[in-house]
Length: 130
Image (tube, rainbow, N blue to C red; front, side, top):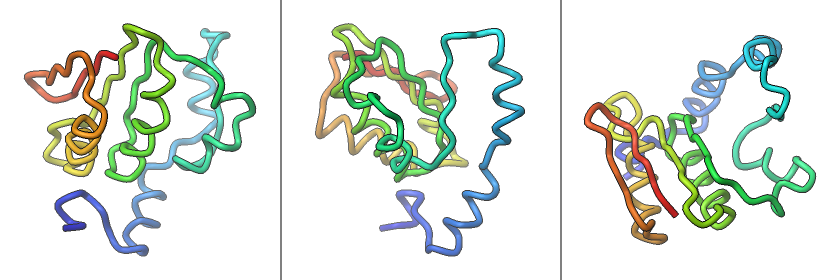
């Protein structure tokens, strides 16, 4: 059922996008000491197709903190096949009572694509080793 997955009706989805939106300039300022960081404004999964060359990249570490079911699942489906051997995906909102959709997305995903190791944190979060 949509509510259990954290899904919402279209109006609620629009409200959540406004609520969870980040200010690009503030994020850029906070990350400015790290010259290897690239920022790409957009919504998941649409933004993945907008970043040139992203599909060809490999990743050693991916941190997913997008709160909701659909973008969490889309992020997992995008990044997991592109992980380097031994790569780690961290899902911040796993087991959060505020964001049940993130938990549902991870649980669904690891049934489809079992990791080498799945480690749930005592206070939330999930680490997946591929």
